[in-house]
Length: 188
Image (cartoon, rainbow, N blue to C red; front, top):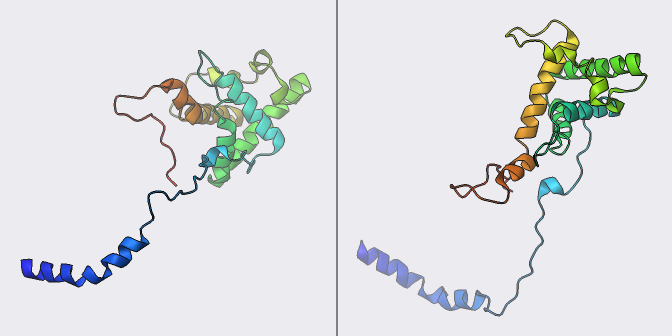
């Protein structure tokens, strides 16, 4: 076995000078490319919701998950933008629930205050969001608005607490004992 390895090494000797000549010298300067995070390169495009529906979802997120104690809320975490993308890839029944629910929010706001849900304050929106105060049960509510609000509340919460902004706020510039921050970055 050693003899075979020695013969293989000898067979490669004639190419050594060519390999050495092909190596760059230590003085060679290579261009440094600027690296940009792919998520920070552009603003998200609205994919699924209409502008009125999107504004209502954003306001709903602001009311349900406001920023507090230096932690980002749903607006800062861009939960509405994420949910808009997620809904564009969701099953048809989920899409229908969100469209109908957001339209119902806007219709209720128009009926009570003569403006869209996005223009309401938290105090004005409280009567419309009253179904959220009902006790939770395993069976989903029969009312369309109540069913939508229940799903949207959980989705907004999950999108906010699992966002990059929340991870950065929780880390506070420090690293965990494992040496990793809780948010995983995309590997290109």
